[in-house]
Structures are given as structure tokens and as C-alpha cells.
Image (cartoon, rainbow, N blue to C red; front, top):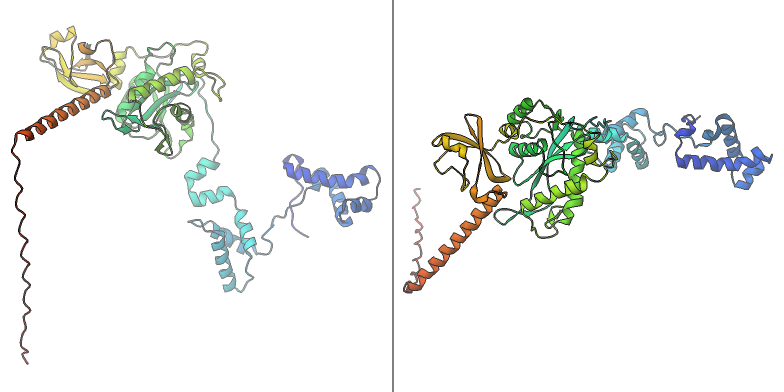
Length: 486
């Protein structure tokens, strides 16, 4: 008697299995409900009488589930011994992944060496196809691929706003025009609130991610925004980051300790916990960037880059506040802005922005206070407080996104905010300064070329030098012959 599986539960049947079972029941119904003989019902349906008898026995024993076609446990392998089936499975699990043709060829070779019947290609294919996909993934692609596809994950959502923030970087699918007028691909750092999915802060920059970019994004995330439509602020209880060098820096650990933030790093090679922030990156790349010049598709630009870094920064900020925060999120079913506000609560804040800057802003430069103020990046900064510190060494800290003012510290104590009088009332970024410098250098080089070109108008024409005489051919050494000594 063939070895087959017991009838499955009706709830476990697939749609196709239920359809097949109902078709067999339709053949039996004239006999069950109308007292038609089973032989006649089978003959009218074109089914053998013995088959109809077998279906009737199974239906009376197990109901509709008994009419499901039984599946042999050894289907496709019953012609092979258990040892040979194990051999084929072992061949299929080797690295690198072999083809079924190669496995069949090897199995036939081993069968001939043992004077056994060689398996058919169909049998070998059935064995390989019957292997558990999780087993083959672990064997051929490794533990990381297995975890990403088959391990259970727990989707956790923070219970309250600011309970958990995530921070991460991504390379944007767009080109911008840098300070030298050349195309460059920018990075985006985002700090995201886990509960509401609201963006607490972000930073757009060129060059590799660093602790500075993380610090600037955190500074914007923690402090109150100038835009009243963007209320997200405060100190989070937990900050969840990956193992990038900027996220594992001593500076960030010190900041977390000073602000009483629990710093948690994701497991190396396991990105599942960062899915929420990765989804936001996907939203930026698929919804906002296609509307802007310089968009990249598979690494190739579909239009010429035209935006500066500051213009891209403004576009991302407008999208976050005006679009992303205002519409309901598909998972929380609430707009991030409304979800963060909740029923009303007070976020935990640092004592002052100056204290926050002292912790976060890692761009620190030593300077000396002169009688006309402090010089930095070609700008001059003044404040009345500096009058008492002329000649003193100070430390300045600044935000590269706004060079209109600097923060001055003396012996680790905050003194004042010094302002550049030439740019008071407007934002001057470090990129603006670099662009101005580049333009100035180009102007000077143009002037140099023009003046050098004028000099040649006053010089007499240089006579053409006589052509050099052809070099004499090198003398070949004569072949020396020696008399035979014999």
C-alpha cells in the first residue's frame, strides 16, 4: 500500500484543492442525494466505477477533505533509497550552488560506481525542488540573507513621541552644482521620531558622512524650529543609530551622556530595525526628487543638474513640513505632525541653545580677538563683549549652514554671539563663501591671461630656429673572430 499523508483539515486546503474536491463531490451527488446508482453516476461523468467507489469511501470517512488528492510523502523519490536521496540533497546544498544538470551528472556517476540504477533527471529535479527554501538560502547565501528573508521580526513602535529617535544617512538620487560649478551627489542625514514618524531634523551635505553632519542634524532636531509649522523638538529618551564611524564616535557618546540619551546601536549586518527611516528615504527619492532637475535613475542623470546645495536643502525642508508631515501615514493612520503633538505634552529641552551648541557643534577653531574683532573665513565678526578680551585667545564654534554669526567661548565659557556686520540679517553658508572664493580666483586667472596675452603684442617675432641635423647613425660594433685554439 502506498505511503500517503492523512487527509488534511478543511481549513488547510488551498483554493485549488477545494475546487477539485467539490468537483468530485458533484460526481457523487446523484448517488448521495437522488438515489442514482454509483455505477450510473460514474458512467455519466466519464469516471471509472472503481475510482468512484474509492471517492465515496473517502467522503464517508473524512468528508470533503477526503476527496482531496492524496500526496505521497516519497513523491518523486520512491525509486531511490533514502541514502541516495540524502546524497542528492547534499550535492544540492554545496557551495557554490550547482545546477540540477551537474547534480544529476554526479549522481549518475556515483550510481554507476556502486552498480545501482541511475536516477532520472526528473527524479533528481524533484528532490532538489523539494528542498526547504530556507535551507537552501542558508546554505548558499549565508546567515545574513537567511535572517533577512526567513527570521521572524518584531515590529515595535514607541509608545510616546520622543521616546525613540532614529538617525541615519543616505546618498540621494540627484546631482547638485557644487561650489566649483561641478555636479556632485549629496548626502542626507535624517533624525526621525519612531512614534509619530515625524522628521525631527535633517542635514544635506556633500562629502562623506561625519560626526559634524550628525551633530548638526541633532542640533536642529532638538532645538525649537523657527518655522511654527514644524513643532518637533526636545531631547529623546533613546537614539537608535547604526555602526557608522560618526555614530560610534566618542563625541556622540559624550553628547548622549550629557543630555541623558540612551544610545543604542543596531546589530551589525541586520538592518531590520532601521526600516522606518529607510522608508522615509525612499519617499524622498521617489516623490520629491523626480520633480527636481538633476534626478538620477540607476546612477544616470535624466536632466542636467541646476540646483545648488542650499536650494535642495530648502526643497527638502518644504516637502517635509508641507507634504510629509501633513498627510496621514499608511502605518500609523495619522499625520506625523498631529501624531507628534498628541493630546498636548511638554518635551524635555536643554537649558539653552548655547549649552546645546557647546555639546554638539564640533567645528571649533582657535582665534585671537583683535581690535577690529575676530577674522574667520574672510569675514569680520564683532560684539561689544569682545572689548574686554582684545589680545585673548578664544575658541569659536559655528554652524556651516549659517556663517552670519559665530559663538565665542573663552576657557570653555560662553562669551557672546559675534555677528558679521557685512551680512547681518541674512544667512551666509560656508558653501556661499566657497562659491565666492572660486569665482574670485577665476576672475583673477582671467585677468592674468589677458595681461599675459597683451605682452606678446610688444615682443618681436621669434625667428624660427634651424632644424636640428639628423643624428649620425650609431656605429655597429664589429664582429670579432677568434682563431680556434686547437
